[in-house]
Image (cartoon, rainbow, N blue to C red):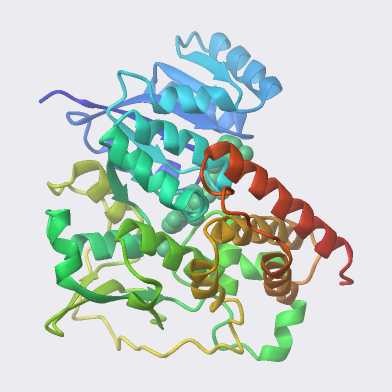
Length: 395
Ligand code: NDP
Ligand code: MG
């Protein structure tokens, strides 16, 4: 078997390290070709020592220099590239078979588009890239002949419940149900939302994840991004996407078929499962995750989301019905609001109002979503607007 050469964008993060974990279990199938990171030089150097990739890239030039020194000191031959352009280059490198997009945020869009246009097998964890890119992203996948595989656990679940033949999806799906854990504040008193700290918001009950997605899970903005992500991945109308709270995170999502039959995918909450499926599809390989033991499982429970607890959730459907580009505005606002909350510049309960205000205040023109450049400039406008709103808030 020829080994698949893998490029991991964001290898030092939660998804990146889980991907390396799965890959390490299958040295006969996978070879680490390129790794990229943003700030964690020593972590990336350690990954290079273990996995011996041909290339490593740091987006920051000074950090790249440090990495080069560390690798040379260890006598490693990995070539170090720098700058954002290195990510787009590696994502499209002729020798790369599969790209794991595990960068957090809209900054991942350009390398994703690059991988898509180059016809790669594209494993998408970086949901923000699809929320920002929308139709442009899906068109690049089509034009480039790429294979887009969802890594987000909910979308992997839906994907696993659908036939391999994508042309059969539309006739099959009546609607989908995305499950949400409800995050760490599902049952805390509403009055306490204003005093939530970044540490509390990042302590997710079921999943260990990066800080940004952890905050998104606490506000439910993660589900907003996932509704938008599902709209594009499965070509659905906004009203075909439902969200239900399922605190145990055992059912990862469901497809309700035209005949009212419901298909679900279950498993322990471990990202190695969707990562392994993305890597091996259509086959299945050992992921290293624990198997669900039904004999020790207590109740699986469900409840509708309470909109007074998660006031931002409805923004998913309103942004999808607004002009194309509005989802990019919402994403930019949220990235700025979450960063401000993590820096203790705004309160937890102010994140939703920043998002709502920026969405209301930013005019989106007909051409704003037609190219990468237009989307990036819209993203910048929305960030400036978010910074103004944030500057006007008192903690
Ligand atoms: P982390 O914060 O743990 O990791 C992010 C990765 O991206 C790191 O390697 C980081 O480098 C790199 N990075 C950060 N900023 C930049 C930048 N400006 N330019 C280039 N690279 C950058 O995030 P997660 O692994 O948790 O999440 C990654 C993506 O996957 C997100 O989009 C998230 O929504 C999605 N996802 C994550 C899940 C999870 O369980 N964690 C589940 C489902 C989806 P460095 O560490 O060097 O700073
Ligand atoms: Mg998810």
